[in-house]
Image (spheres, rainbow, N blue to C red):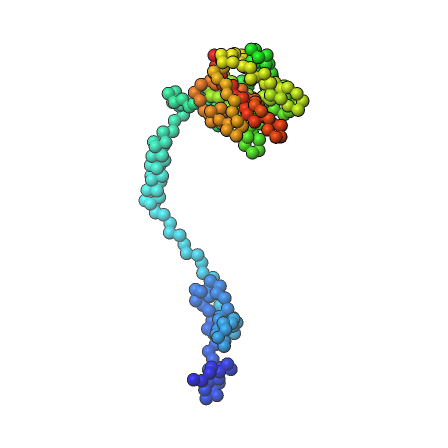
Length: 274
């Protein structure tokens, strides 16, 4: 078998006839096809055309215009679809007075929220007023209330140690006196000494708890139960979860101290509106 001649000569040593590359007038050329390719010793290399390439500027294909009949059908279909969607969703500007939604911690709007976040319906009830003070007369506790939210890790805030004699209301729960669980948190002790809820452990079932709001209106609660639980077994759903009662929970530290000097338990006082 004869090996291919890299110089383009035929077997009788006569120069091989070469054809000039035709001018590109095809659709591929008009689309900007690249330089022609040839095989040279088994390697694909780029060969520039010897003649200028004629580029054709092809106009874009025209879009078929919609006839009047097709346009009318499309408009009618759009109107029919809108009517169907309205019927299925039951859109109405009049609220259904029979529908009642039980408030929960997740859906509670803080009384201090901007006006735009509050209910705007004409007959909507006024937003509840934030609590300002809590008192437990039977154990000698009276404290103003600060607002508490969530830490960046999702845990509930507690009052700072330097304000140990001030309790805090968790704004993610219910407003005291409203349906749902309202939660008030206070320290037992801090590095500065005894704190606001130091004597809360003395409270008994049936005791009165009074919460006064910013307008001076007082709401009374009756203690129904108390429990001391380990912090690693805190009943989150029982304390913060939704309830149909107008409930109040008071929380503080309790129990023995761990190696770092922190109480290992939480004392929880459960109460409902009187």
